[in-house]
Length: 497
Image (cartoon, rainbow, N blue to C red; front, side):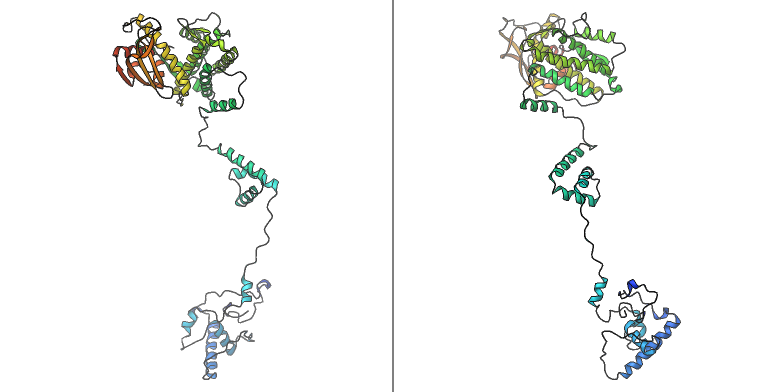
């Protein structure tokens, strides 16, 4: 094909070396060279073409219009002057004013618009029919990779289109996406501290337990479970981590160095007092002392080698046995007496005391390994504070007999109202208690209150555990200074090893 699409370079003749696949396909003209850059044979052809064009213009006479044929005939000989003039008219453009160089150097538009038939030859071929989507089994096998965002764009499109049509695959895809969410590395894998209680509450709402745990034993059940969850992830280094056990003796704070394993052994030996009261085996044997401090010292002396992580399972098995036994024992078990050597507590109060000590020592262990350990739930914290408030009058009387507290001022008949201190505890486990000051058998009342002390619930428990001194415990004080001091020191004296 000749004309503006091949720039007139071939003069209408086909190159014999041209492949058959490109015959008849219009070509986009290339960049034209300037006349000075042409080789000498090409310059002669151009000169003859210009001379032929001048003679043709003179022979045309006065006619200014020139008719361009739609389909120019193919010249027989491109070397002749007339044929060269026609070639120059199509390829190089008309020559005017004797300035061919300017017209040859400047680009020009095609002589006539392209033929629509030729444009059809230039249009790229239409895409073939789309491939069918993969089968159901293949798409189902891709759900795991899709949930992990590991599919290619084409696979992702096919899977997501399939999920809009297949309900079983859509359900499985949602479950896989939820499972992938648990694999995120930046997410805290520790279970919420209240998860266990929520699960149990939901289970008991659906079907009540055949033999439920008594309400007064639930604080011990909860605190032993929390400490057990903390210990399960410990390695050998954590079991031998050093810590200090703190308590208050007379007027001075006292501390004792121990390890995490030694503290669990201490909890197990003191829990043995409750086991003995229920008729269970005492971990120290039948001839073991009754005082909690003496029992702990005896265990530490006889433990060979020193306690290691192997103490975890015996302690947890013992706590499970205690909960199971009190659950089967019935209502009468709450009043069984548990001897602590110098004093005794009902079984219900003894288990609350054991829950309190389990929480405090769990806190000590968590601090030793730098791990968070929140306080008990509000209801459990309240029963612990209530037990401590009931024991303060007896501790105050013992300190008075030892000459460590101010003398009683107004003795009253047992069961009658006497001088009192208003203990106001704030927080989730808080409340109001009136502590009898002159006799353990007296009744504390608001009408006979001579002083008031306000503390936070956790702060009060730390005072009872001997972890903070009485001087720094009270956030607010009002009234009789001697009564306030006596009650704060009596609360700290409840602590022990």
